Amino acid sequence: MRAAPVHSLTFSFAVPGGERTSQGWVRRWSGCSVMGVLNVTPDSFSDGGRHVLLESALASARQMRDQGVLMLDIGGESTRPGAEPVEAAEELDRVLPLVRALASEGILLSVDTMKPEVAAEVLRAGAHLINDVGGLRDSAMRRVCAEAGAAACIMHMQGEPRTMQHRPEYGDVVAEVQGFLRTQARLAEAEGVPSVLLDPGLGFGKTLDHNLALLRATTELSADSWPVLVAASRKRMIDTLAGVPNAAERDPGSLALHLDAARRGAALVRAHAAGAHVQALRVQAALLED
Ligand code: HH2
Image (cartoon, rainbow, N blue to C red; front, side, top):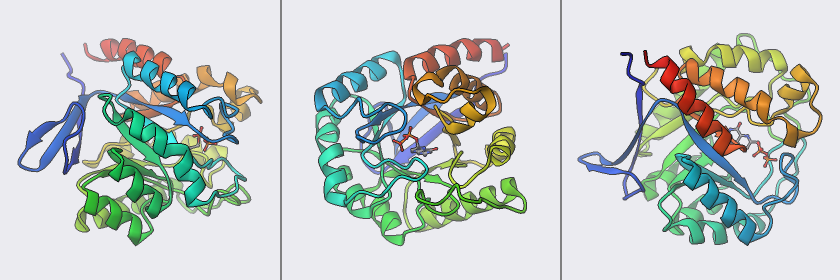
């Protein structure tokens, strides 16, 4: 019997499902789990702003929790290619009510933000993890996570969302992305961030070939001690590969990419169709453990 690998994240404060240890509160899981996407961005490419209303966002959050996701990822600023940034106050207006409402509902809460001032507020309001598509390059972001004792997701991006898809270029995309993620992880840990997740950042300053090379390298990227998050859900690469212009119709392609990433060692996948992913990953896990 081949047991599924066990992954963990450490926090300096109590978290849902966490175990108190001498290092802090440790949340462990085995195999590949799901981070459910909860966007509260009117311009979000993938759900057409369906979650703008707090009530519907809360209902989606509870449904994903009951379906068995490990954590929710709440986002108030779209980072799709070409997206314009929003002010911190506007981003907070979108995400804070959700964080406050969900803080006591027994689910790990990640907030997808690049702004240290937004991160500080949501962590005070009960969020547990900061998902920074800026890869913790901003020292203020590392400081906010360290001071709060929160875990962080470090994502690789070449350029910035407005322009990143113009002409992405790499010598060796896997080596460059892995080098960046390792450097940022060590820096964050040295500055007191209790634990990090690493994400190659599919579509963030990457062509289809770059994305495919990174997906095929999930085993290599997962070989270090940090858990790896793969986030292919509804991304444009699925349109390029299978001709699906409408993002909301890309869940079958998302599942195919994520199941493959799980087989190659990903600890977490970020998914819009969270329930379908939990089901598919559980079935696949049974096949892998023989
Ligand atoms: N992709 C998006 C947003 N956040 N976070 C991580 N760690 N990795 C990703 O690849 C990633 C992310 C973009 O997708 P989505 O949330 O669907 O769209 P939008 O930014 O328009 O809300």
